[in-house]
Image 1 (tube, rainbow, N blue to C red):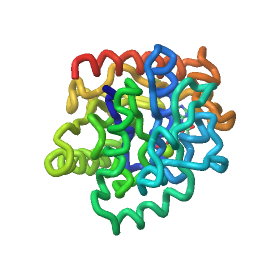
Image 2 (cartoon, rainbow, N blue to C red):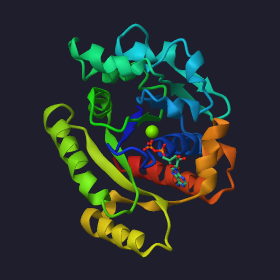
Image 3 (tube, rainbow, N blue to C red):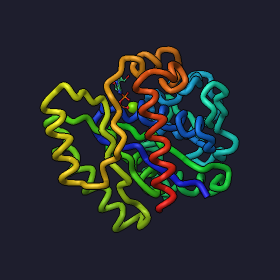
Image 4 (cartoon, rainbow, N blue to C red):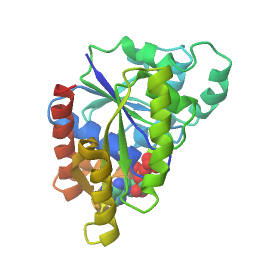
Length: 256
Ligand code: ADP
Ligand code: MG
């Protein structure tokens, strides 16, 4: 049965999409069957997985509105080795359209239930908000992966996310938990980053993943080639860190 994880943080530009596509590619590389779901109307995770969002006939939008199944809408990325349930600007409309519908927060959960045996991992790239789209992600997930930069305001933003997760856990999805905080874009030469990293460990203990993703320009360059860094330049330090992270995730779900 697939384990479903949201990559979420309501801040933009913190590394959610980079984490989602590189973890997906890392997991595929070590033999896991992966479905990557793009829940952000920007469609960056779709494009960054070698799938052209402008050419998609069916997307996660159709799945949320129940006009297509996941099997019909997902496409396999040959280059990346995982399936992509893509998104494009159309998805922005779903936010409004879903409000009118029943079971509006459980649509994705129901759709994913049909493919639960087809995958080991489902990774959901969430938009930078705590919106109906993110709620659909949180309602179907077993856990949340929170990428964060070790900066001064990082902890502050975390409180809102932790409270949202607690509420969803209490009211909508008793399975939901924070699987872990992933330190990304890390630069050990910056003293403040080291300090925040230590604070995180003191506060959240083993909820902080052992793997640290360094700031690495190859990870930032990869999307312009429509690839995750792990595929674009497997030897890059950032790519290797994501493959390590994939192995750490496999280890964690064994204990779940
Ligand atoms: P989000 O999805 O949270 O908005 P992104 O994954 O798009 O964040 O990352 C924001 C920017 O930071 C992008 O330009 C991305 O290429 C860059 N980036 C992300 N992670 C790294 C990293 N480890 N090293 C260097 N650049 C990174
Ligand atoms: Mg993103």
